[in-house]
Length: 461
Ligand code: SF4
Ligand code: SF4
Image (cartoon, rainbow, N blue to C red; front, side):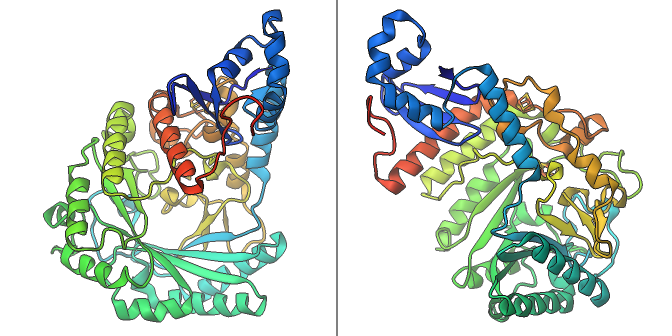
C-alpha cells in the first residue's frame, strides 16, 4: 500500500505533526496524524507490523477514497477509467447550452477576443427555431432533467426579440415536461435596466454575469462604448438596482498580474453597500486570442498573460485570495476534476448566430473550428478530432494533476504551438498554488459542516 500518484500531501497542517491529504482524482480530503503517515511510508516494513493492525480500518478507508493505492498498476487502472469517464460521461442532471443571439456589440472592449472576427449579424427567428429543435432533440435523446441556457454575444440584449422568443418557448416546452428551465445572461450590463430584469425573471432569468474592469476610468478605458464614451456609471446603476432581485456575478480581467483595479473595485462596492449583495466574482487573466476570421493562426495579444504566465499569475491569485478573505467573500476552491470541455464528447456547447456549434466560446468566429450545425443530427469531423486528441498520453502518467488537467487548455496549445495536440503544462503554477487552495478548501469544508470529517487518529472515520 502506498500514496496514490494523485494524492497531494501537505505537512504540518492544520496542526503541527498532522498531514492534510487531497486526491486530485477522487477529490477526497482527509487529515491524518504523523503515526499513520509514517506507517504508509513504511507499509511493508516488518517494524510496522503492530501499526498495520492498529490502523487497518483507516488504511481500508483511505484506499477506498483513492488516497492510497495498492501499487502503480492500480493507480494507472483507476486513472484510465477516470479519463474514459470524463470523456464520455454525461451529467443528465442538467443540459447547459450557450446561445449567441448576436455577434454585434455596443461596446468596443480593448481585449475582446471576438473583435477581430466580428460581424454585425443577429440570430434570425428561423435559426432560433432550428436551435431549439436541436436542443429539444438533445434533451430527449440523453434524458436530461433540467435545461439551463446562457445568452451570450456580442451583447445578447442587442437581439432581445430572439432572446425572449427562445426563453419563452423553452420555458413552455420544459413546463409541459415537468422539467426545470432557467437561464442566465452574460451581458455588458449597459442595457440591463431593472424593468427588463423584472420582465425576464418571469421568463426564468436566474442570474446575470457582467464584466466590470475596475472603477470609473479604469473600467472605461477598457470597456468604452463603440462610438466612444464612458459606460461605468450606467452599468453600476443597473447592477445596484438589480443585485437585490437576482445574483449579479462580476467578471474582472487583469493584465500582467496587476490587480490594483480589483482592490479599488472591492472598496467601491463596499462603500456603495452592494459588495455582499452581489453574486460570485470571477477573475480572468487577459490572454492571447485567435487571429481574424480565416486567419486563425495570426494570434493577437501574444505578449500577454498566457505567454509570461506562472509567477505573475501566482502573485495575482494570492493577492486576489487575500482580498476575498479580507472582505469575507466566498471563494470557489479551484481544485476540481474539470478538464478542457473541448475534449469531452457531451460537454456544454455554444450555438452561434448562424446556428454553428462550438465547444469553446473562444473559438467563436472561426467556422473551421465549429463542431457541427443545429440543422444536422450529428457532430462533424472536427468534433471527433477534438475528442480524440488524448493529449494526456504525452504527459508523465504519474503527474499528480493529471485527473484535473489532462494536458491543459487546447486553445492555449493552439495559441502557443499552432496545434491543438501539445500539452500546455502549468505544473510550476499548480505546485505553488495547490497547497494554498487545498488549505482554503479545508477551512471552508470544515467551517461549513462543523463536523469531524477527517481522521483525527487511527480507527476513526
Ligand atoms: S480550449 Fe481552453 S478556453 Fe476553451 S474550453 Fe478548453 S480549457 Fe476552456
Ligand atoms: S499538462 Fe502538466 S500538469 Fe497537466 S497533466 Fe500534463 S504534466 Fe501534468
